[in-house]
Length: 380
Image (cartoon, rainbow, N blue to C red):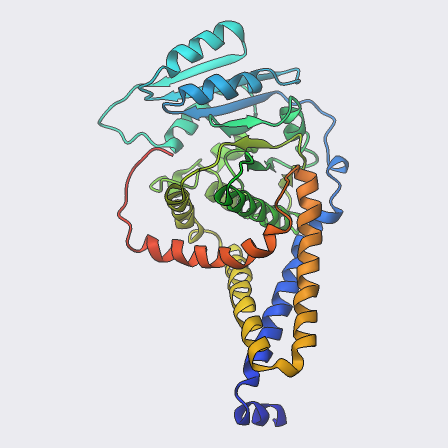
């Protein structure tokens, strides 16, 4: 009661109290969830069985990417796999690139979808057709603009199917380029991976990325594929995982050899549109996942604002306020550093302190912008 009376008489102290609360929430996420990546030994969670794999790639007007990236998928060091490329209504030279590569690689199979104005040709439709065409029970998905970082990619991803696991979440990074936007995109991608990896390790998987994702064909059809969210442009990866993943059936692949890499957006406007599209699926996540993501992001947003206000309004406590801030920053840097090393990401450590502050502002902008965006049915 005395504390409440004190706050009523000195309302400014509520700011420093709220700063402490947001700090504790942030520390909870770092020490209960994110820190799990530090102690995760990727090699201890492996299957020695070599499952037959079907790699599925959907492509529309991806001539250049297929020319550059598909040979790296076709030359994997793995004994038994096929590659299925779904050529979905391409109007460029994709068909001829695929036919030439098929002559060189007998394990490449091509499924072509012809344009029909009576149907809406979405990526989910193309993926479903590719999955139906797969001869193997284990599926590995990636995109035409992605390339595996090593010839061990398939081996690393399929080894995650140990015990009762039938989903493996991989990492899909972006090429490093010398620009501020590139740095921001790569950090955003890394932090999202830290979240979905660590939540999965805590038994609460909620998403994966279609650039590097594996699951069983049986699981896909038992859950009626993308039927629950077929009307949305996005969600072939994160919404499907959110729907079917649980603490028993989901594994993670946290290694440089098991990751893929793509070319990032080089234009802020294009990246903004991409992020807006991804934001539309988050509202359909299960309640627990939505709540954790909201709590982490909102507490981080207010943590920085209240930190600045506390320094300004309570200079007599600046040593304690700075000590709290430094403690969280050091913990953050340690976790980011270890994750970067495991995933072979570079030049993101010190900038992460700045990006950690500005990304919640971008997220607010994405959400607000979606209220004023008209729907389109572009293939994704």
